[in-house]
Image 1 (cartoon, rainbow, N blue to C red):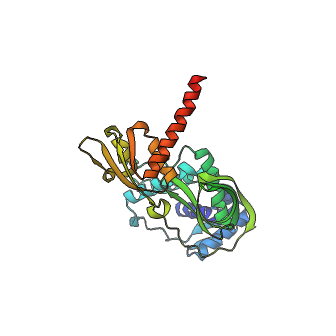
Image 2: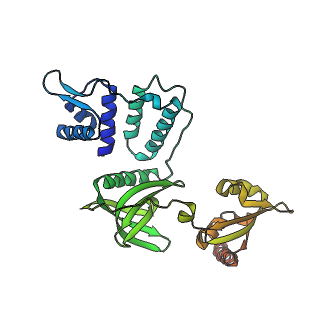
Image 3: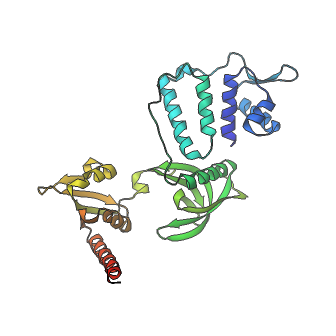
Length: 306
């Protein structure tokens, strides 16, 4: 991607006294003409890049111009490296690793101590997520429409969207884009996408405001829940909802209260606790779980009879 390449070229120029267009073209696997256009873009961005033709010539940054590293502390640099490492865990490419090495090479005397923060954003779905992230990054950069099959609680459908932002939130990746079918901006979860493709069609960029990523927007609390849990399930409630989500009763059980997004998700979650949880409210959740348990019991009773 062009932005990544510009950052890489600037990093090389800041670390090396002089380089050449053919060397940069080979390093970034593009044509010499592309490199020269990138150099022009850097110049327009205010970076004093000098080019000298002929023997002994090359590309360099004007003498005396350097990024002031005193702006950043050693701890700041560790945070930057931790962030790059986290992106590399899901990128599916070696770009961020290469960028980390460039930063380390130019800052070896500036970065002290060992890594103290390790962030891994990859998931069980890394093999399927990384290609999707790559396709969407390219589509956003090139302003190309993407098409995909989308699976949601209301069903599945074919969508075409204008991609604007890739978002990581609550251990999941999302695309914020303008859906051509719904004629509105939508937040699409990458794990629910199938057959994702970057099309040949381009689009004119709209005024796209940043999406509302508040918990209330992504996980709207529509249902008030009360449930009793066995004491040995305290660790799960702590992990998933925090220490303020329950109170201990006189009998030693845990009275859980929270807002939940939808009835289906609520009953599915409660049933993962087996007989260690009893829902008190809402009544519809109690009835749905009771019905599901009866149907499950009937299935297993038939197997035993057979």
